Length: 117
Figure (tube, rainbow, N blue to C red):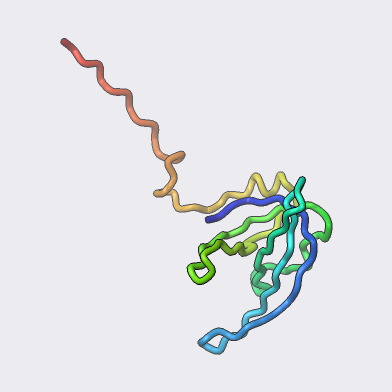
């Protein structure tokens, strides 16, 4: 599930792991707060794809996040896909979802022909 998020960045912790294939992947967990609440949440950052230094601490950051269901923990995990410079940039960016799955791109149905008696 792709979604656009505006949230306050609180900081991150770094790490890496080695895949079963032997590839080393650098990751970090970025902490965010939900504006207007005391709730926090963690998003994962693949440092090979997104530079965590572009996140502005204790400021609202505008993000494209990919949430995926984790069967092992029975929850969703969020991965930062992109960081935008502004809310306007975030709003203007397409989600790049497949056109064949979007109802908003299908032509409007033709009105039904009147039934004659």
